[in-house]
Amino acid sequence: MSETRGIGRRQVLGIGGALGLLGTTGLITAAGLARRPASTGDQLRSGVPLPPAFQVPLPLPSVLKPVSTKGGVDRYEITQREASLEILPGVSTPMWTYGGTFPGPTIEARRGRPVVVTHHNELPVPTVVHLHGGRTPAASDGYPTDLVLPKDWQDPAAQPSHGMSGMHGMGGMQDPKAVVTRLTREYTFPMDQRPTLLWYHDHRMDFTAPAIWRGLAGLHIVRDDAEDSLGLPSGPRELPLMIADRAFDDHGGLRYPSLDPGLREQPGVREAYLAGVFGDVILVNGAPWPVHEVDAARHRLRVLNASNARHYDLEAVTDDGRRLPLVQVGADQGLLASPVTLRSLPIGPAERYDVVVDFTGVPIGGRVRILNRLGEGRTRDVMAFRVARKAADPSRVPRVLAHDLPAWRRSDAVRTRDFSFRAGRMNGGHGWLINGLPFDPARSDVTTRLGDVEVWRLIADVHHPVHLHMVGFNVLSRGGAKPLAHDAGLKDTVSLRPGESAEIITRFDGYRGRYLFHCHNAEHEDMGMMANLDVI
Image (cartoon, rainbow, N blue to C red; front, side, top):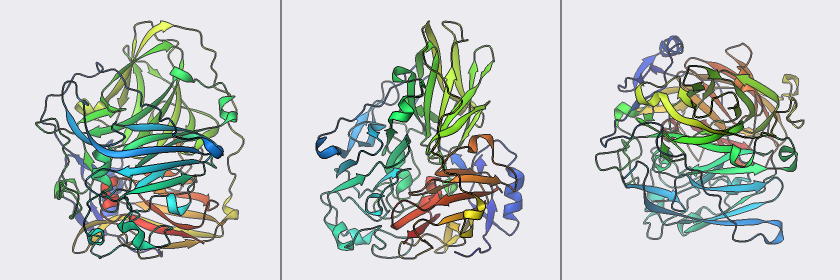
């Protein structure tokens, strides 16, 4: 891809409004708005009464048991199906689920031990499963047209493809016709990667955002012996936290502004939400503003932002106004070399952070609230911890966490590429583009050789969390300056702020095949902000 002049747009921040195209002044406007503590998108309002904060207990996602462990391979089965769940107390909400729960069941894997997951689709539309952050062969990466079809799906080639007909670029599939009759799909994950928190979600072309919103998301944790030996908080003191916002209609169903509520033909959302969809309810592990009892001890929080578009800046605050340190020990792709202490934690859509919070100094009966500094009204609250008892704490946070992080240098790079992430015109309407182009599964956008090291320079008009499939990367700079403190470690998603540029460096050392890179604002992704990455 060569750098092209993108089209800026009027910032849509919380207050809403239609997507506005501003010509060449848009990026300057966005840069000025970068100083505002807000996010790109507009907020839906729930029609059903909402519960008070910090009363619903925090649920912990169930851990899926393998159906077989023979031959050194852990095999799992998951059925994608509709279910009615109690998300708000006393209210039944129809959802699309992995295995009947939201979040879906957690898969616990060991480094180097392969995992095979067979997905059965009992939903009314095609689906695609992507293991976000996985070092995965292309055939199992979840390319947007590698569909798992429902039983009675008619004419799968009729799915809209940004104005194109047919299915193309099948992400490692040798026979594109195979998609027509596939009711189940087997995904193979070698698990040859650092221990970390991954997540799996739907990645169907043009309809990723509403499918995730309806419930198609779950956690996948990779562990190894080296991490286990560090002495970090574990067992009940290691908590996975999937944070996501949603809105509910007058009957308790999920509210989402799809142009086609059946998610069958016409992709996209109503005009006011083209920049991204916010909900007015903050869920953690599928519960609204939950509370969790903890010991007066260190706890390891494995945090995922699974929101479609909402950004957070998280802080841990006691009832007397004291802010507890957040000790970051890991990023998207695993442990840092050494801990980083933060006062607050910015986290964009699809990013994961591994932090340790010490509740030792909080009085018994005291409360620590997790707040979002970017929120307003009820979206400022996220969840709370109540310190229930004193307890022994054998855990520690070592000064050295990992020795296996890559040490790529600029001089190692065989090439540097430039990418702009900006609003623009697509098929006569509004879209979100990479280097001026909307996604086309038939086009090769970037071709690199297996083993090549590259530097990518990224620039944004508004908030864009940029995600690369299959590889991790290091952040070299932001805006020509040093990376931010929370940019440490190996990442697979970097959250660009309005008007911001960043440089990343990576080595394409996983597998050959067709992969993707895209904005993980799910509405932007569905509206064209995605490109092909071919590793040869």
